[in-house]
Length: 78
Image (cartoon, rainbow, N blue to C red; front, side, top):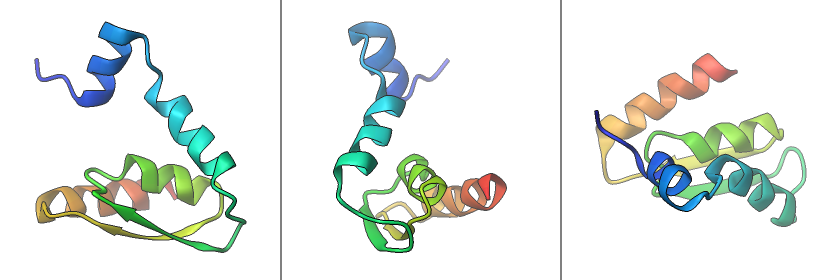
């Protein structure tokens, strides 16, 4: 079984990545409708949180396959 970084952080260190993403949005000082740049977007987990908070975003990543997956995940979450 392959474990992603979020799983490793949660299981080995008790760090809740999902809660940290929510906190970043709350502390980021951005308002609904504003645009955020998600650099190193990977599979789009942060971008989905941004969208749930009514933020627009551009996601960039060196891995084009990850961006395609992120796009599909974002559409499914919409």
